[in-house]
Structure formats: C-alpha cells, structure tokens
Length: 282
Length: 258
Image (cartoon, rainbow over all chains, first blue to last red; front, side, top):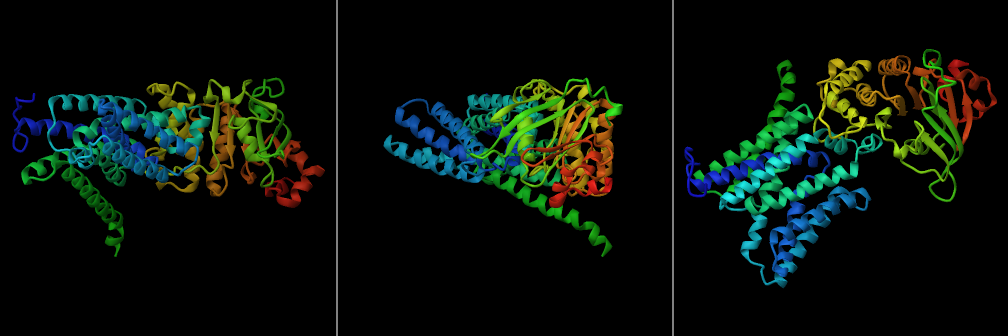
C-alpha cells in the first residue's frame, strides 16, 4: 500500500495522498461522533486538553526511554478520568477542570522533555498538526480505531444520550452514569492519542467540535446531528486535504479552517432562513 | 381512583417509609416520617417550602440514606432495585439544557433504558411503548419535533411521557405542573388518571398546585418536618391540621374542596 497507489484522480493520485486521505477521513468520521456527546456535556475543549496532557506523557516516555505512545496514552486516560472526577465531585466546573488539565499537562510536558533533553521542534510539531507522512501501518491503526469507536458509540448512543442530557434522571433510572461518563472519557483519550501521532492534536481536537457546531445549527434531532456532523467532518477532511495539495498548504490547518468556514456559512444561512418569513411579509 | 384499581387495602404497597429520620447537619430535617403507597393509589405530598419534601423524595428514590428508619421500594431498599423501570420519575423543573437538538421521541425513548439492560438494541416492544407513552400525553403528532420548539407545557408532558415509557407501576412526580398552562394541566391530569385506571399504577405527586387533580387524589400527605396529616382531601379540609398549614400557604385547591 505504501508503494502502490490505486487509480484516483488528482490531487489524490499519489500513494502518500491516498494514505493521508484515508487517515483524515477516519478522523473526520469518529471525532465528530464522539464530539457530539462532548459538546452536549459542555466539554468542547477536552480534546485539546487531553492532547496537552498526552504531551506530558510523551515527555515522560522520553525521560524513561520507553514507548512514548503508551506513556502518552496512560497520561491521557488518567487526565480524562481526572476531569470527570473533578466534575463529579464539583471541585471544579467543566471549563476550569479543562484549564487545569490543559496547563498542567503542557507545563509538565515541557519540564519532562527538557529533563530528557528532548525538547525540540519535532516534538513540538505534535501540538501543531502533522504533515502528510502517513504510513500504511498508520492508516490501518486509525481505520481500526475508527471502526471500534463508531461501533461502540453507535451501540451505546441511547444510554450516552441520556447520561449527557439528564444526569439526575439517568441516575434514578439506574443507568451506570459514572461508568458511562468514564467510558466516554476513555474513548476520547484513546482517540486523541492514537490520532494525534498521525494527524496532530489540532485536527483531531478541532474535528470533535467544529462539525458538531455546524450540525447542531441545521439538524432537528440528536440522531440527525450525529449524522450531519459525520458528513460535515468527512467532507471537510476530503476537501481540505485536496485544497492543501493543490495550493501547497498545511493539510491539518486547511481542513480545520474549512470546517470553521463551513460553520460560519451554516450560521449565516440559518439566520437568513429564520428571517425569511418576516422579509416576505415586509 | 382507588375504586377502579386493584384492591388497595390488601395489595402489597409499592412504596413504604417507616420512621424515616434524616438531616444534613446535626438537626434532623425529617423526623419519624411514615408513608405508604399502594397500587392504584393517587397520593399528593404537600407542604410549605423547606418542609423536607425534596429531601423525602431523595430518600424514597435511594439518593440519600436515612439516619434511622427504613424505605422499601417494591419491597427492596431503593438503591438496590433490580428493575428500575417499575419506577417512573419526573424530576423537578426538568429542562434539557441542550446544546444539541433532540426530538420529543428521542427523549421519550430514553425512558425505555430504565427497563434495565440499557445496552441492548431497541426491539418492537420498545417502539410500541414509546408510541403509547407519546399518545397518552397527547404528543404523538409532535414526536419528531425538537424539544426546544415546544411550549413549556408540551415539554413538561414530554418528560412525563419519558417516565411512562418504562410502563412503571409507581410514578413519582416532583412539582410537575408548576408554571404550565391550564390546557396542558388538564392533559397531564388525564394522562395520570389513565395510568392509574388502565395500568393500576400508584402515583406520588409532589406539588403546590393541585387544582388540576384535586378531585382525583385519594390521599393527601401534609409534611412539615414530619407528617402532620395523612388522609382523604375532604377530611383535610375539615380537620384542624389543615388550618395550621392553611395560614401559611395552604394550596388554593383545598379551599375549593371546602
């Protein structure tokens, strides 16, 4: 797969572009799916927060001279569960809990990396956005992640919907509220860590929020929001990647800007539709 | 209501509280509270603000543990109830603090999760129960509408339909008619009476505004830290106990009963 490209037109005719296409499309599908539940919980920034605590995990991996993927994953899962714990104990509101995670994560990462003498541009690149150097193994990993996340979230969409929309009722109804919140936190952490190596934190964290923001403007149901968010996520991934190749732009940034632009257009369009009956009367 | 239901006197009670005492600090908020609800019985719990109504409800639903005394839901401790679907709960002033749109049907469907086995996919019985719950509150035609496009009264009925969806044998409603229009109150009353007469459900209604259901209630329980009255509404209107409550904030509907 790394040498043979299938027959796709420009700008996806080359193998490396096809691998980048698959990887970013996978992120464009699973990130909005998770993100719809996170936005409903008012935890829109958790993807970024987890990414930053994973950065501390990379620092710990460098210091211990062990696999950075596993230390990043351990830090991210612990951080995501930590946010849940702070929220549940009402020790911090959602956004303060995120801020604590965010800043302590990146500070710890910088300190650990400097101790390991590994604070260089390449490590910092993880925070920005990856290039398009996606290997065949990366594509397999991210596709497996996408299938797993989609299967799990689709299967548990009703209890997750109930828990993120009405905590008090869900507890009386006997749903394992804390367990489902923890599951969502762990799935988010795993998705962020797995994807950030390949496409960068920027892309995976932004794709958890921006397509959802667009979809909730236009959809009229929760299921419709999920479907539309995935459609917007996948479409902006393809279009953004194509644009980045054609005009020689950074792919992650281009996709995110396109997703933000889609939101802007959707909100203007929605206002226009909302106003139109008044206008015709006037 | 009791006349239309199974034999209230002999049926084993759905909910029992015996000598329940509880407080948050050193002083108890509730002292020695007794309460029982039988199948098919419609019980209204009233009391002034700060009388411990919300606290009692939490104790009855298993959210709090009493200092002393005991609570039994369907014969079991409420926090160890295997089939939560037998309990239909409508929280106080529920609102879907929703960032993401959700339809009436999606909300009501989540009521089926209380049946237990919340991980399983929905079957035909689930869809039928959701449709039935929507019909019983008169929202079938609005099933696909987003909740935030509905009036306050319609939203309230959607939350009641969620409680109906698990086909409960006991309904617990916390201030369900506060601030909703009279048309919605009437539909709410009809839906409750339907659950009691058709399905033999017991109802515990906590409310200040009972005018919509004044003629349907079997028993009124007046709470002021402890139970100061427990009996039929007509008796309350005659008894001396009612006057004490009356002076402070006796609900208007008691005067109507005269």
